Image (cartoon, rainbow, N blue to C red; front, side, top):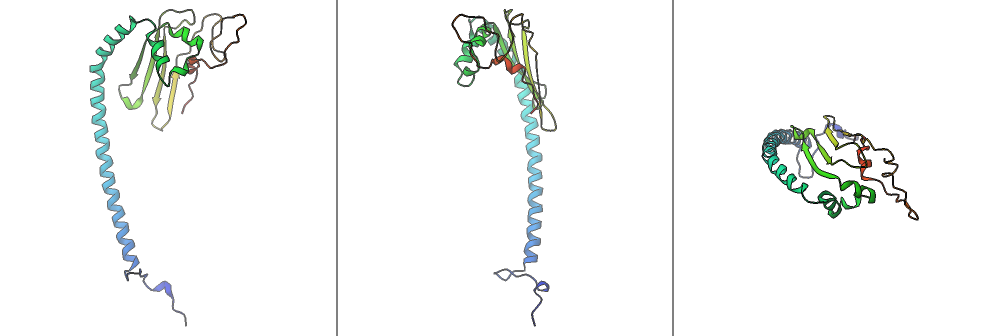
Length: 193
């Protein structure tokens, strides 16, 4: 006759009842989850406090940024030089973009009142032969469902200018037009992530 093993309590190699261990394990996991929930609550509170401090110091920084921008405006081709000298941004400007960047007078990044909601990047230009706009803005809005809404100023190009894979090039004899993409195509890239 064969014994029915399903009716016997399960015993570990150490002689412990596995049902008791499973019960203790479940209780331990439940206690661990309670502690984790407590930590998350503290982390959320800390995050809110950090946000308050960040907002306060953003207000304090603003006049300093304004003073800095006033000095930058007096330096010829500052933003062009800054972009070209940056290891990541330097490759973003093609030859025609560099001509346009000579008209860039200031650049700013502004967080929304609630920093967690998004930010805007503003490019301010002096009057130029390329487009009508004096201000180009790209905005990233973080939505609750975890997506990012991206909006940008549609550029009002002047007659004969525009972006067909870059800015319209002036016709030059014996020179091949570059095929690289214009930095300004970034303002037409507004897909949601």
